[in-house]
Image (cartoon, rainbow, N blue to C red; front, side, top):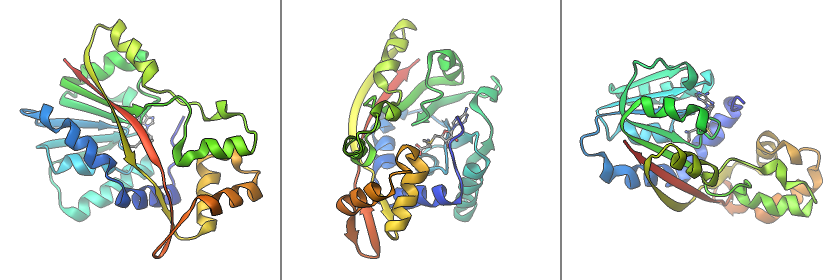
Length: 245
Ligand SMILES: C[S@@+](CC[C@H](N)C(=O)[O-])C[C@H]1O[C@@H](n2cnc3c(N)ncnc32)[C@H](O)[C@@H]1O
């Protein structure tokens, strides 16, 4: 499935980036392993919050994403800041030629790619480390969305997502050496007004799209008023898996 990037979702992503320490946290958790790591690849970079953290730390950073608008947004940011150690490509990971090798490969919340059939390819692109950042729970509960699903008596299997419990047995079957680190980060979403918040939910959670009234009620209970707008709090529960080759 193509991640639905457009000008609105890119703007939401960039706004959320300003208030979260999630990406910095990943960089800091990984940091101690990375002595002697010069080149890194960020697979499924999106508009590049993690890439922007990595580019300040490593000699050579490459980032790829299947989405043209996401890579264009990242290109604009990078050009504005004058980095020269970064390469960007709008490309599906499956099409990345094998001749490209890096000291470390990152996949952050790119669940469609973290699966057994692609694990060998992921490993082949890395000389030393693979870092997988994936959800820790199998039902998506961003913004406490489960509470809305329960209120609407909606089928929460619609919120099902691959999580680390499915990945760990794959790594065991492949006989890989890895460590698992569970962590939580505040990763909320700022909005200008309530209508923008409803629009966000229609975009990311279409199962609630037809329940306008209930969604508005739930949003008015959940949004915090902050200077200049609103903030929807969210504790993101994730797992960092470090695979060492
Ligand atoms: C949830 S976003 C994560 C973005 C970024 N890694 C982050 O954590 O902020 C998932 C990204 O994976 C990209 N993606 C999905 N399938 C892909 C593929 N086959 N090859 C490359 N990128 C892909 C999507 O376009 C999207 O930008």
